[in-house]
Structure formats: C-alpha cells, structure tokens
Image (cartoon, helix red, strand yellow):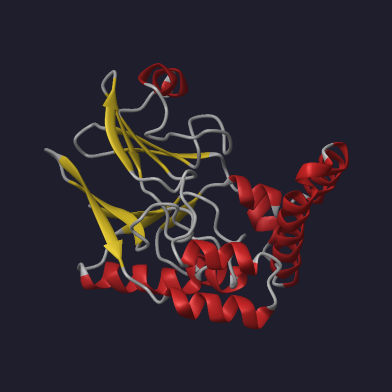
Length: 253
C-alpha cells in the first residue's frame, strides 16, 4: 500500500500541480490523505479544491483556515478584537479580508458546505497493525501550537495524551518534524505552500506499508514561486504581500 499525505496547500495550485506530478513520477499511490488548510492564503482556492476532490481514494480533514474561511462569525470576532487592541488592527484586518475573499470564492464555486462538514481527524490501521492518526494541528484540535519541534518533550507528551495511535501525521505549523515520544512517532509533513523554513520546496510524504512493515518517505518538490506571486498580484488578493513574503522565503517560523 502507498498513501500520499499532504497538508497546507493554501490555495496554491502551482505547488499542488508539482506535488501531483512528483507522485506520478514516483509510481503513483493507492490513495491520498489531505490534512487541511486547502484554500485560504493563496491565489487559487477553487482550483485546489477542484483538483483534490477529483483525486482517487482521497480522504480529507479540516484545517483551522478551512474553518475560518467558512465561518463569517470568526471574521467578525477578529474585528472586535482589533478594535480592542488598536496596535493589532492592521494585521487583523488584512487576515480577515483574506478569509472573506476565500469565503466568497469557495461559496461561489459551491464548496462551502463540503468544507464546513470536514472531519477533525482521520484514522487507519496498517496491515502490520500500526495505528495511524491524521490531524491538522494536534489530536483533538485544528488550531493552536500544533505539533512542532519548538515544543518541549513535556508539551508534546501532553498534546499526544490519549491519541490511541502509534504514528501521527500533522501539518499546521509548516515546520517538518520526525520524532518519537513515549512510543508514538510524530511526523509533521511541513507544508505544500507558504513554508516558513529555509527550504521553500513543497513538502509532503508517501507512506509505504505491507503486512510486515511500513516506512514514511519525505518528499520535496520545487515549483515556480515567481508564478505564484504574479498570479496573486493579478487577482488583487488581499493577502498578496504576505503570500509574496512566503514565496520569497522572507517568513520564518
């Protein structure tokens, strides 16, 4: 069995195209797990949603920006917070405009209901008996600190408590990680788009499994960041400046 696992595409169909081509170059897979943050903070939310929903044997879960971009009340809540903290108002407004822009795009394309119904996690038992859990941020939540190498061992242990899994895949932080805590292996995929680390390539993994063993193969794929910037500018995306910073490697986690 081969399973491609992706997270944090963020409306970047150019990066997604590169990843899907790489999967085919690697011999294809039997299915896909997609761990959220599909549409927001990128120039082509609808194109990404159309592509991933057409993938064979694909399973999806909800990321925090998927929730933000389909719940207008959250945007209104951020505006109230900005009024209470005037020093933060510019950043909050930019983020709220970006989520509203994405909400309009996915609503017009008919994806709003589908995104709102996405589950919080995915589970699978491999042929060798390994229990696999897929989450966006951490078990039981799509938001917060996530599973990051910046966390202490005690913080990771607390985040994984009761997860009932031997192998946990996550995204959210966009920072790759592969370590084991109390017998639970935690593999953060990094991100397909908007990487805050020095390596700007799209990141995902292929899980190989058979009756006796399994292994996780990290994959790194180059794509045209300049083309993403050009498309974002052409569309007048409200987060164009921030997206360009990610594409130029100017954002660090």
